[in-house]
Image (cartoon, rainbow, N blue to C red; front, side, top):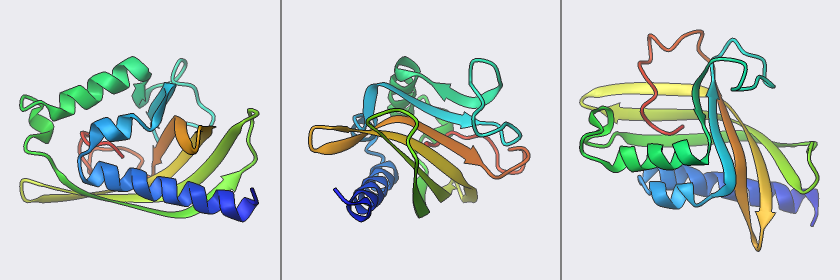
Length: 163
């Protein structure tokens, strides 16, 4: 495969992921992760290579916590997201980076996620780093690390949606 073909495949994958999140197809979104997949949202003041084991992250979900997060978001008693927010996930500036681990594809992009709920509009902006692997004919997420471009979340409120 050429770099251009891989780049296009990664972009299509990221756009499909955004569509799943906007449609609240969270089980399908969860299926995009490898069995050891992680979903991370570090605080903005941390370096890009910070570990959730030694630093404070807003979200540091391993596979068990990620499954529980998805289950919780579907429940009516998840008051922060019932009824579900209306969201639009925008992805741009997709770049392939040199992979650290053999068999991985490292991709970076910027994102803007709009959320509308109960008459309130919020916008989350930042960058995401993906560690992707090929399984069968498609890509899967080994790690998704979303870094928000805010010094603090006080103005934005809590992160009750998936970025």
